[in-house]
Amino acid sequence: MFLVAESIENLERRIEDLRTAVRRAVIARDTARARAMRAELRAAEGEWERALTDLADAAEDDTSTAKHDAPLVPVREQVHHALTLLSVPAAPKLIAEVHAAFYGAGATGIAAGKLTHLRRDEERSFRTARHSRPYYLCSALTAEHLAPARGLLAVSTWPLDRRIIGPLSPRVDFLTAAIKVAERATRMSEQDSGVTRLLWRFATTIPGAAEPHGGVDAATVMEAAQAELDVHAAADQAQRKAAAERARRQMDEAEQLFGSKLRVLRGTA
Image: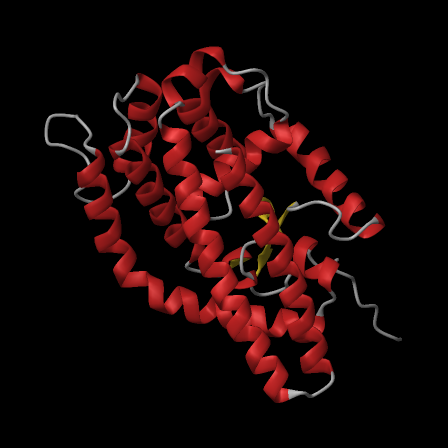
């Protein structure tokens, strides 16, 4: 598992280098190089997703033991674990519930106040020494203003459009998170009450996801969530991509991670 994690960190550094290379090629108007660098970037992101799946599968065998015997894990890593499982921006409450359900005893407690300070520390670290860490916990950005979306955290290694929140994104991300949680639940040898409660939280607001007599089944949740997601996904993705392109044109690297600051424009008398 250590080797897989190390490989992911190397891929994350490579992805950041490729993004920098793409930006420089675009600025230099070197279309051929920009196209080549984008192709390499897409390939590297595909490798990262596959490596992440391998890491999740390797971790699954140790889940039961970890829930009871795991050492205390720093809050930063807890948040990263939960967000990686969800694969979409999330609020502190959901992050805490996901970590408690799947990683258990290693949690030291995730509070909203802690995460506010944590995000500020991440931004300070990035601005002081860029790319000194394999990943940063950053802000989701509103599609309209490209400002930090209130109460939502994301991971810097995700594509920019995934970190954008448009009009349809809260529902799309909720459905995506439900699918990811249900997928992980189906791979568990035993489902404890924490996982069941988490699945039920999703199922109660997805048509057709809850069982008739109050039960919850992971496969049913996945199917129902995917059915609704198919309705909204294309429109949401188009809105996110458009906002991401605008962000790349208007914002520097730090602002793309942590958002622009909204300013009041004063008129002249």
